[in-house]
Amino acid sequence: MRTVRCLGASLFGAGAELVTVEAHVEPKEKGGTEVLLTGLPDSVLRESKGRIQCALSENGLDIAPGRLFLNLVPAARRKSGEILDLPLALAAAAASGHFDPRVLRGAIFLGELGIDGRLHAVPGGLAAAIAAKDRGIVRLFGPVATAAEAAAFPAIEAFGAESLAQVVAHIAGARALPRATPEEYTMTNTSGERSLDDVRGLVDAKLALAAAAAGGHAILLVGPPGAGKSMLARRLPRLLPPPNLEERLAITRVLSAAGRWPGGLARERPFRSPHHTTSYAGLVGGGPAATPGEITLAHGGVLFLDEFPEFRRDVLEALREPIESGTITISRATQRVDLPARFQLVAAMNPCPCGYRGHPRVPCRCPPTAIERYRNRISGPLLDRIDLVVEVAATDAEELLRRPEERRVDPAATEGAVAQRVRAAVERALVRQAGKRNADLGADGLDEHAALDDRSRRLLSDAAARRSLSARAIQSLRRVARTCADLAEQEQVGVSHVAQALALRASIG
Image (cartoon, rainbow, N blue to C red; front, side, top):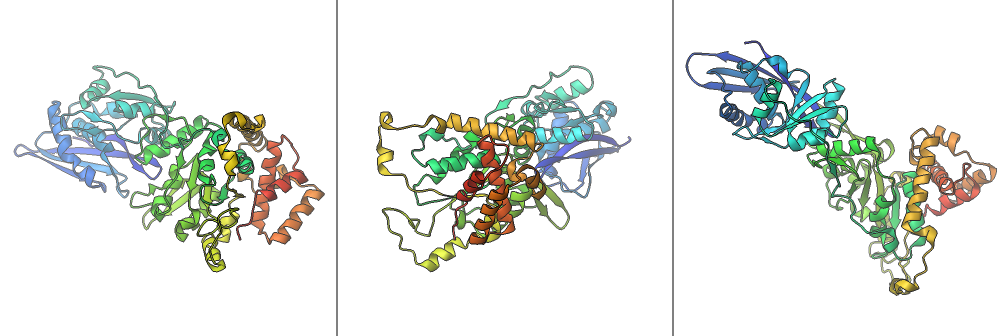
């Protein structure tokens, strides 16, 4: 019997890699069936040999006595997971002569098999669909839920099945499967917070949050415990424009490949808030399978790091590359993978170890050396990459205790009004800059889209000399000034916008 090939996929990094399953049977007259699986399978795949044999036998697709060779291509890449059960079983059945191997061409097969031949859902449907389309494959077969996820990619025809028998009946032309339809899904890892209108006071901090949302800028909130830093951070996703179809696919692909299968196409931006004890690999990613970390799971959304200086120094320094490039490269001795990590950073910290430096009512008892050590946990190069540094003052008790009818609400400061201005500013920037956010503008882009007049240049130059700002910090201020102009619906960046940018970059030294 000639070698039979069937296409499957294995999850790796933030995507899927196509895997060709090769099957070859050497029959013999006596004895049982020996199954040999090669191609760097992991322990889950090695255990699949028994359940595949049982599933085939339960569905009348017995393998003749002899040796069944199964090989996974490319052989040099480690394969993982139960996602390859279905293509392994189909290749084995075709090699045993149960149907014409040509019916396996032009399609990709995913799914975990039970010993009775039932198909169980696996993560990676959308990631595999995108990888398949890149190879010109337009049909996908898998468990019903996995196929529904893959169907969110419009370039793929996805078919959902409940068992191995249903897949075989379809490809053999006996009974067709229905086309899978995509499912909408509301992500459960978003901020889950109420409206920005519920935050009392903090007018300046809200304006800073609007600037961060409008320009895609990283922001650091500095203030005493209970000032409202976390409340503000968790409300940032409510100000961001909803993701477009391309962003929704990218968000879902990452979650799908990471095994955090969302069960449909994401409609909201992710919000990730890892604890400060998170390890380097937990935040950045890594491990044998280049598992995505928190910065990749936050791709397309918000990464909130509370108690910013409490994170390990090497963990924080690893943020420098992805903040600028939107990707993180994981290198190992035998492999290298680029993981997407275009997140918006929101960080929060106290002004000192005890948290009360500058508080109007609670005295700070931290010695100067302790304050210096605390703030030096955040390096200058990392701080340069954070466009907005905002001091959040404690809200006055009288403001907090006012009855609803006593509160004075500026209509222009409501969440709806702010979100509308933010989205108009984002749209203006994306149209002007061919899809680039203000935070992504380089030197040439700033010269073209954020040119300064003489007064603005003098103000920025004086501030740079007075504050000893680095070249990166100066360019950061120009990007923020461009955002301030967009929020004010001004095409030209003026001296008032530079002044606003300077006010939005407090010194924590």
